[in-house]
Image (cartoon, rainbow over all chains, first blue to last red; front, side, top):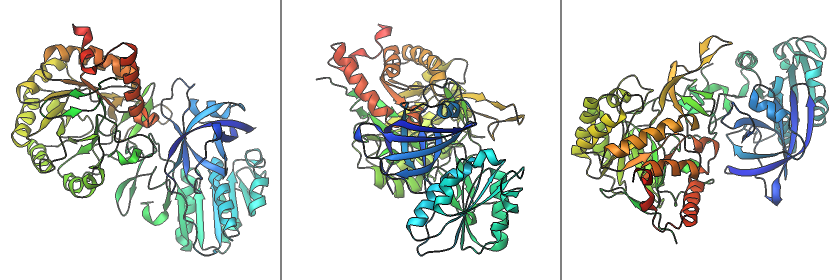
Length: 256
Length: 304
């Protein structure tokens, strides 16, 4: 696994939809960016927010040699600065961080289940799976069409994509757990989204006895396993750092 | 050429005055790819207790203006695990390794220090009588002169090398406590640990921390910490190690001019993982700009 580095990035492209933006960033000065593994995250310094102090941890939405994509949803002052970024803005980024999704050794049937801004890391995971000969199937949940439709073409390029929206404006009406696609035969589920959604999907995974990994977003400070703030109480080892042992955990490790 | 060496006495010689604050730098190795672990004055490792501790339940952290609250509660795998598993992996660093020692009872501190004494490569321990996040011990000792003296005297009997005592700012007069631990055999005092604080999630109408209150750190506490260092430096003869919201070399120099012989960098490591080494470089440059050839000559310049 690549060791974390501090790298200066420049925003080269901003796609916005409502309170969410997808930033494309490139390292400044010809620095080589270490390639993140799917499910890893970055910790980004936001200097012009007055009431935030720590870096903002953001999952990797997509990465290619020399280019990083982050999907940011406005949740407070720090993320608001990020969402309102303009091309040319620069950010100091600590990356890559954490322990990502486990990629299957041999081709398996994989379901990638996301909700809200939690769909973001599944795009990069899907691409990495595709490169390994897996045909990923996405099941994506959102409040409404507007939240998701601008991102859909990227997912559809990589794999078959099913959608559920709470208001029924796109795909199945309801939560991802109500999406018939969950009944597709699968060896492995990868899950990222809001906590109630992940817990509901986890319960469904247990019922089906399918291998399941979830990506947590416990509140973090350092991202390096030093401050011990972001701990998750695991069944096997008690409190462990979400930033280093996670953010992706096998469901069997969690006390859910 | 600037001489950044500083001698804190009782065998603790630093190549420069910059140390890491306990609990903010893990065991150093977490920062291996981000900062030069051979070029620090000392790495003060995570608070170590006699028995393993799980710490407090999540959530343990709340971001605050110019700082953060934490309620980690001394999560660590215990002194034996440190001695057997961690120390062999970090002993090769050219920076001093100092162990921060905490406990619920005086006998815990004593036994932990006694076991650490077997490690010749550890030139100092920092006795933590100021952790605000544990139910018993910790700050309970550090808020009275009698409690502070009791722990210091007991550890002094079993710890043969440099004994640093980390003080709590949650007291009426920190100089009294500093004098008490000096009189009980401490070789230096480090101050300040975190301030007891609290934050409320108004939407959910609940405290942010599982423990309700926690320790406040970061630049928001810096002016208070500097004031306390200035007071203590005038009150005791042993060296004072300053900490509290230092983000960079300029901040560190405030503490040094106010009387700190050395500094610790804590919360800044979470925001700038290279803050320690950048502080070393800034101080070196500062000395050059001010024609100071020997760093130790500017310690406490305000008090002269």
